[in-house]
Amino acid sequence: MQTRYIYLLRFILPIVDLLMLNAVYFLAFYVTSKMGIYAHGEWHTHYVIICNLLWLLNSFIFGLYSESSAKKIENIYRATWKNVVLHGALFTCYLFFFKDSDFSRALLVIFYTMLSLACILNRFIGTVFQYILVKKFKATKSVAIMGSNYTAARLKQYLKTQRNINFYGFIGSNVSMFPDESGLLTEETVNEISEAVNAGVKDLYVCIAPERMEDVGALVKEADKQLIRLKFIPDMGRTIAASFTISYLGGEFPMMTLRNEPLEHLENRFKKRLFDICFSFLVIIFILSWLYPIIALLIKLESRGPVLFRQLRSGRNDDPFWCYKFRSMRVNGDSHLKQATKNDIRITKMGKFLRRTSLDELPQFFNVFEGSMSVVGPRPHMLKHTEEYRALIEKFMVRHFAKPGITGWAQVNGLRGETKETEDMERRVEHDIFYVENWSLMWDVRIIFLTIINVFRGEDNAF
Image (cartoon, rainbow, N blue to C red):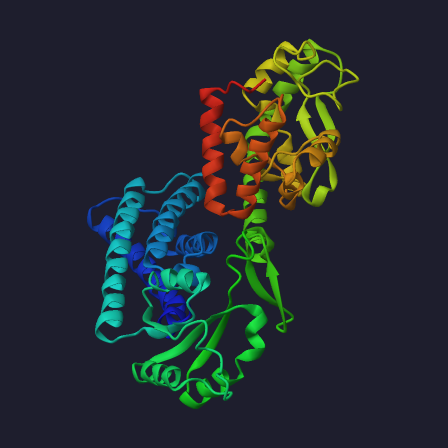
């Protein structure tokens, strides 16, 4: 919930952080010089610009200054340490790969040690400041709830977790929010609203069944008279089992959606696409540039046929696209119809190695770079399997709301390879839908690390 403190924090925090970053930067340079350690002269010029740009880029990636982070101090702490770690990795890579190696490692260590300590001190002071605002100066918004239904009980639990909210309590019941036979609210209800207003309550959340909205005229008039804002929350908690969100179409028409999809937001899609482009570009330049010709030569030496195998697969919104892999089988007529199985006689010796190490998937980074795939997402299936399983599994097509990925949440949980039973595919689909409904950029990073670990550890279903 928005308050003046949260609103101002989103603007004050980045200014304070940038001042801290630059102060620590030049202090580290000064300390290093006093210690007699050589530091490259460019630390005084454009290095500081790169340092600031990287901080702002990482803050954008981790949402450090977003409204959601500002609501909870824990979110700020979490985003801050992620920012520092990634900043250290990217700044070190920049100095190593894009500039000459004549820079002081000692200066780098001193800088990030001081930056880590400064961030801890900065956030500690911020926590103390927030505590003083909330406890001493009462910088919170007082709210109350009217209603005694399922939604009201859930709303109470939510409000009590918000540090910037002072929950006054309940006012009236499901019946008292409506007028009596005289067309007015009961005197008891009017008195309860008046007491809440005198206690500083500014907002009254009314949890009401949608079909009763036309009966709240008397409550609206009384709220206007008492100078208290009404916020109506539809009580549909028991009517619709799934979680839902309500937004407004054109700022006018209330719209309810039954599935949370973080990647429906343009900001999140931009973050994921930017990550995909950068990650796939690095893989293509630093890995595929030299590994591709080696694998291509080994494939050609063992069997005739193309180096790459391409196959039409189901993409985002069920749009077909050409998916690329290193060819791991002898050329055959069943490759577009039949899944690979354990001890499949079509698989070559080189193909077994490629499949076991997942190296056969590397060409899909070209798919990622051009935009038909993502690094992380539900694995794409051949068109034949999509048609089969959409008829067998109720929510199978939901996984196609997201771009298909080279790896995914299902794969790192061992749900990969041949699906002998429908239950195997159902479990895979459950994991894919969970990913679609709970996506975050850091979750993508986690899945990538788990994939790398699984490659070195080996997987039973990698055949």
